[in-house]
Amino acid sequence: MFDSIRKTVGALAIVGAALAGTAVSTAGVASAAPSNGELRAKVATVLNVGASRAARGAELVNGEADLPAFDRAGALIAIAPASWHFDVVGATENGDTINATLLTSTAGYEPWPFPVSWKLINGQWKLSHESTCTIGNFVGTGC
Image (tube, rainbow, N blue to C red; front, side, top):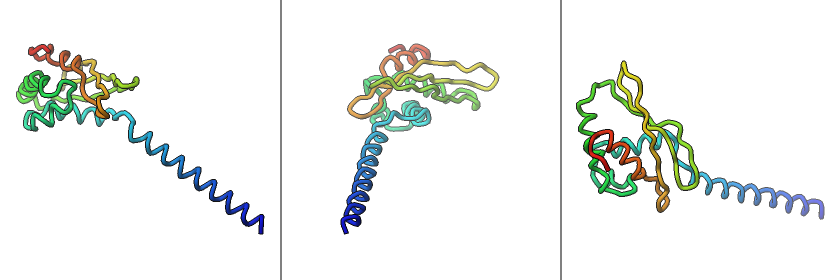
């Protein structure tokens, strides 16, 4: 009888440990940094001049105040060759900052790399003002 109780208590301890481990693991996943693809989607949102300004601004550290650079970039993308595309690569997290490279390219030309970063603000990853300046300087609007 004691052997049966001991096995039951042991099994409960294992199940309890497994459940506790799952809870810790799930919490860790929720706070994980976004993937390159998720960061690419964030850039696509700010470049989408057809999206609401509120939705676009929500992706930026300085909110809608930083949209003029992306409005200009969006206007240039609209007249770019159909082969123009962009990607976000090499994302690395360092605490509350993610650094990555924004690659833009058109068929027949070497890609143009731009260093970009995101800041973790109130649980949301937002494109930094420095990145807005990098893109703004390239498209002629500045910061």
